[in-house]
Image 1: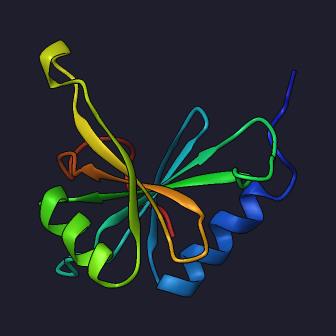
Image 2: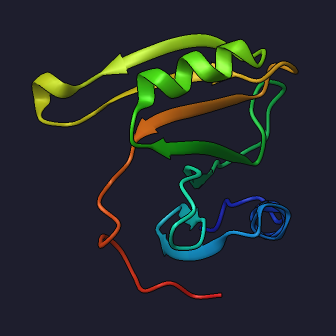
Length: 123
């Protein structure tokens, strides 16, 4: 059963064009965009969610960065707030911070993965 919201692809397409990012890959409910080679802005990971609720949009944005703690501090200085932090490093996984933008939209700051992971870039 396909429960993905009809406008998730439109949201991803908007951010791709708005930021001038490249499409890196799709995997399940995730789409990864990244800046061009040499551009050190974070990757963006869009996670499609099954339904839109008051506190959840049709996609969930992850920022993948080389220095997550520094990025969390930078975003807080811009007006974002920390909602919670998940640390699964003891299980061999990662640690990430869920934040809210100044309007209350949730997003996550996660550690970057190697650039060689995934599928070849598409435009």
